[in-house]
Length: 502
Image: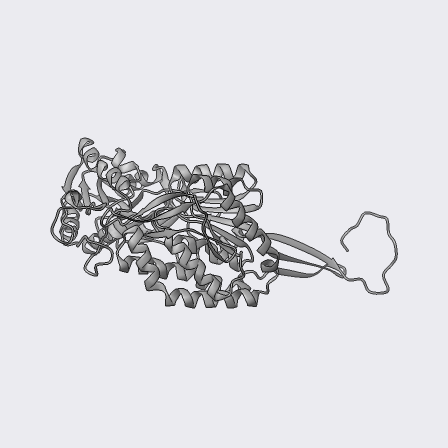
């Protein structure tokens, strides 16, 4: 049986008698190991290690940091298959999807390799007579990342490469549902030459989270997860004087105008709705079909859904795997009956989807629910409004662009959205008027490249700063302005008057 522990001060750290949680294979429902849950003592040890390592790492040259980042990037690339296999085994997503997750995370590592350029400040010569001013950015100290189960490699890589490149030391608290990827990444940092204590991992639950949020030596916290927990992390962290970026939930809409290529739309809706079993904060979960395209579009979506292959993540034939836990599967499945009660039509029932081998999802061991399509979902219903976080695609019929835009803008969330159209004017109007942080034009999942920043609006983000990109660099550093004067030997002597610029 696998046993997953912590990583503190450059080595694995296990504590006898610790509380533990079970690790399950989502495809079979069988327990495959345990993970330790940190007490306050383990968090204290990790913070102490990070605090001790900070002065030397802060003072390490930008070239040294860059060299280590490049070596880490190469090691991660070399071990991407191993990392993807760990993700598939514990999360359930198919291997190809896990590989894509690692690839997108590596883009942030590559961005962070440019830290000598990203940390360049400004310089103004002779702002007053023989006085110069310049701005620099310096690291904060010990920072922490609290990350979700759906992307156990990529989301941490949104955070720690930039934080470490900027000269901070980092503590990762990954999800206890799929923790193994965190230890492989820690071991690769060690092999890359990162000094002990600069990167630490504490496995755990709310006890570990609360101590990180309250600890006086933790200067900043990054979080990705559900909106209620994001709000809690933000409020608790800021109440303890920390800088916090907390990314919450989503309910992403795709607005389909009548002039759109419906085959392109159907391909995009199925890919964006059911990839990673819908367990993505950027998944398209609502299609707003503008009359009169709804019937034709639904037919095209259903025909594609019925050809999808659902099976274990380690089977090359699988296109979609199980959900992460039985409890989560049951919660997602409950929305199917709720949708029908609210007036929707269940056109594809994922409980009847066969899993590789031929048995219906509902009758198969493991945490299975196939792709589900609900049509004629009433606008404003719970199925329309609430984040389901699973393979459930809702079709809402609207009469116009204006009606669709209004539904998006009055929603609780503002993470990602997309418009599908061949009208450039309509697309430009949409990107200007929609109240969402990330917008796709004929692109269903508009996750920005690493040199831009990721984050939403409204209840999808608590705090002012998005992750990675330029905003990530600013989040993990603070500005300092220096004004200097080097006097020549012929200075004018003492002057007790109020200093003025000359």
